[in-house]
Image (tube, rainbow over all chains, first blue to last red; front, side, top):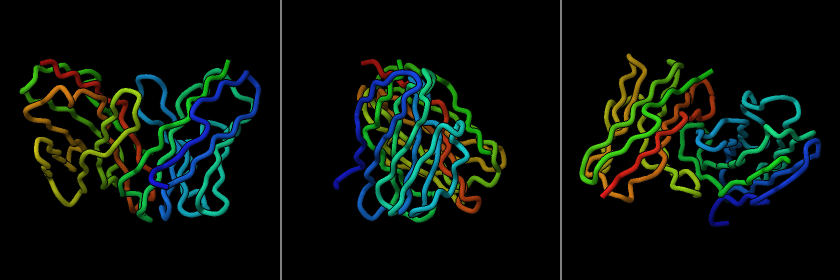
Length: 115
Length: 113
């Protein structure tokens, strides 16, 4: 596609439910990143993939959060037993370079609201 | 891990004035320092970046300086215009360490005409 695509754009769920957020990166981009952004804050790093493998998952806040990228393209961020504090905009970004020092192209984000 | 601090959190200037945003980082291994601009309700977009082998880089009205010894870098915008109003984020990463890009908390720049 022309840009990074994220679905859903908005997700409202109840506390304790399971949520999946999808990211479709720019074709050919080997690196894929997940960040989350709360109001008035900078993007908070969660996890980054080089190809199919997680190169750095040190930003995942706890074991309720998990992400996969099975074929090295589309990625899914999975959140179990959601809590109100998980409410944020989840941003996905991809980069054409295999190193971690290239321009990130962000998607529009998935706004998650946990009631 | 890397920690990036950014100041000020808000900055208001008159059109035509200059604006300076400063960041410090903690990991001496970091060697890539981009700046992203995020307009209200939009996605962050890269506006300029600098690598540790240079001390300054300029692109029209925007410049970035880097002091590796002091571990700080700055964004300079000259002749500000109302369309420069946005949130600006600095960030840092290290190729050698394989670390992902870590962002500062952002600076909200308001340019009034």
